[in-house]
Amino acid sequence: MYRSILKPITGFSIAFLSLVALSPVFLLITFLLSVSNKGNPFFIQKRPGKNGNIFHIIKFKTMNDKKCENGILLSDYERLTFVGKVVRKTSLDEIPQLINVLKGEMSIVGPRPLLPEYLDLYNEEQHRRHHVQPGITGWAQVNGRNALSWDEKFKYDVEYVEKISPILDAKIMMITVQKVIRRHGVNANNLITMEAFKGNAA
Image 1: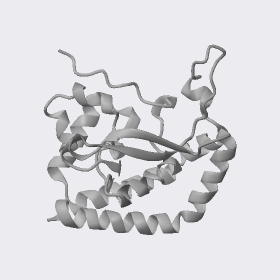
Image 2: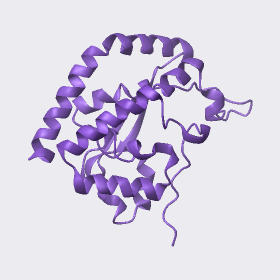
Image 3: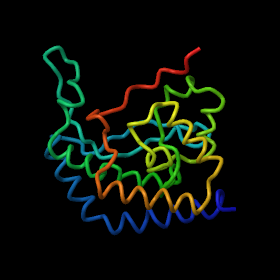
Image 4: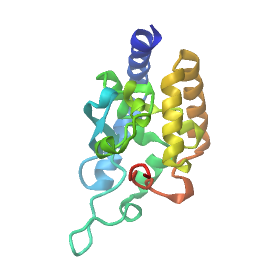
């Protein structure tokens, strides 16, 4: 009952109230990133949701589109703007995903939605992470985030699917708030993005 009814209702309520409360911050960041990026303040990308169904995730765009003289995008580090760095460091870039929760595409808590091209690389056990809706935060995020290996991340994701409960969700949300306040676990080892998942070793 919690998984199919109470969790979606609770998530929608939290997302709606949070979006209303954070609307001044949302509008301010939208303006600052529009100026900083000299364009679109939002990053929209296809991601697999529950059962692998594709949806468009919405985040604040923390990097500009600067390219080198050969027309190739510069590295993440070089494209990360000052405003974008602050927004990402404080995890405020995740705020627009509340819209995904309101649309029923995501949950507040669940395995983080990864890239569509990874779908064919998962083994049967790893695919179980798609048995529930993806989340803004999750069990893997509060247990190491970017510091974890891919195997460790998937292990936590599947463990969450198996043990999902209101108590576990509440625990994850509380730890997430603590980590955001302390700015702990963000971009571990100074990496802007984690190394791409390349599949399981034979």
